[in-house]
Image (cartoon, rainbow, N blue to C red; front, side, top):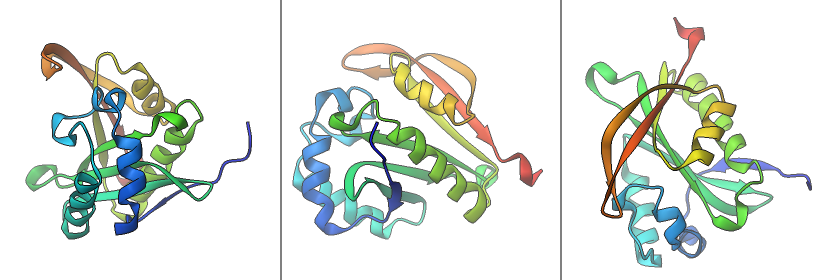
Length: 172
């Protein structure tokens, strides 16, 4: 495997073309919430980037591998009694699957969440058939907390959601 430099960076309006090219993929849409949209257009990407730039509760970053945007990763900060928790979400373009990029991106955003944001808990919900996503979470120390039965409707079918979490044990 060639050397990879993986970083997280802010989103720029100029990222819209690359995001749209990668995100306009049914295989990605099958593993994300319906609000993501499919087909995914440059207009969708433009609106998403603008929304993120104004959001107080969503911290979204481009996943950059060797200078190329290859996906997105983010945290949705929770409120009220859950204010020390965030939900993690991510996707990566199909040409970049299986290269360890998301594993490293999760490591980087976890460090940011725990060290910079001082969060105590990061959690994720994974569709039952997305074994790859479960694996990358587990590689980063996330533990399965449970399975919500018939919690998801995707592509007209009912699916289970596997709930994962990672605790910042340095803070308690």
